[in-house]
Image 1: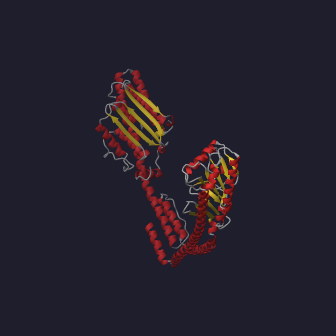
Image 2: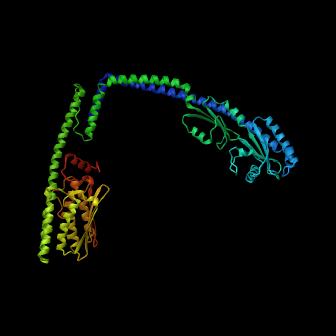
Length: 619
């Protein structure tokens, strides 16, 4: 049907000139749309590339100037650290604060101030005199540091810097909980180095030269392309030295992670500092937005025209084609009640009517086949259910015979009473099912008959989960298993026989187990029994069992129960036998809960599900 439909569409394409013209139009329109979009996106990319190159060039130029400024400041710090006059003033100042030391500090402050007045990039210069603990600053004058932790930290900084230079941020913490900026009275980045560089036996005196944040910001602020753009000067460990707004490192990292920001970063070739410029992408792309807008308008108009033409051409074809496709999908899912409505008299009308007729014929064929198969299945099910009663009756009459030879009339009376109760429940007014609780009660009557027969040489124990007692199951499922356990397992024991019946719910299954500690089976016999059961539950086994002339002649009770389970509970049901010679036998039955019903009257849907399970379609 599908192949015929595609051939029909191909024939329609060859015969319908309007359809061919529409296809040609779409093929012409799509490349034009693709070229227009490519040009719009390419122009935007070129704009971004040009903006990036210009921005990098400007940032590199400013970065080079900052490098020269830093080199100049480092040279100034070197000249201060080796100035003989300043070193002499520090050396002549003792540990206390005598008048001469105060004069020396004032003279030292005067010389440092002259340096800051010459170089505008330096905001302040401070010298720490380790012997007296005095900090001489061009911004705050002289102050004596008495905190032992601060004194030790400053001396450690002097020894750590050695003859080199250490750049220290004002936010650098000190041992007393303050910061380096609080200690020397600054908020910028400082060049820290030891005094008296050429003297290996120098005192731990410290020189700090602080760069002006305002001057550094003036150098880079002119690079901002708009009011919404931001620029930052950062150290190699991503600390902000200065910037166009007051944010910290975490806030800057969050802004950089924003996809709507256009960022350009340039690194210093000397000091590993970097300049970072950030600008909203909407401003960068502003010049290309208008051209993109015109492109989108043209594309939108072209698409609308294409859709209108397509609708005009295909309105007579697409609608019936869609209806037919949906009908085929529903039929493919097994719904043969589908019927497509049509009032057309052209080729589509004829095709739709033919489809409806085909579905109707298919439905009749399937229903006739299923009905015949269901009749045979129900007949076999009834036969298997009634077949077990005469077989059990013969064994029970034999039990009464042996009881009559070994007991007085009272025991025989009890045996007959239990037997009558058993048959009364077996009839159950024509019902096909018992609840688990009724099944156990019914089973106990039979067990009691056998206990009287065998002089109570075996005991019975029931382990029934409370939640399972109301579950309906097919009649006479457990009785043949218990009968086999008694006659083939426990009968050959003298005393101490134990029979156990366990029923529980687990993982959407009802699990029933009959176990005994009888003589068990040999390994060869065990393999034979398992092979026979595997044939009953084989995936490729048809829903109906073998005819009588093909069925094996032994394992009557086990095969009867297995066949009924397979027929009623489907492919997911299981029956397993495990036995060890001399130790006993264990028979387990697992039934899917969704198949445990009050009645087992098969329906076409049920049979269809069984057929799908047989083919591996469902689980």
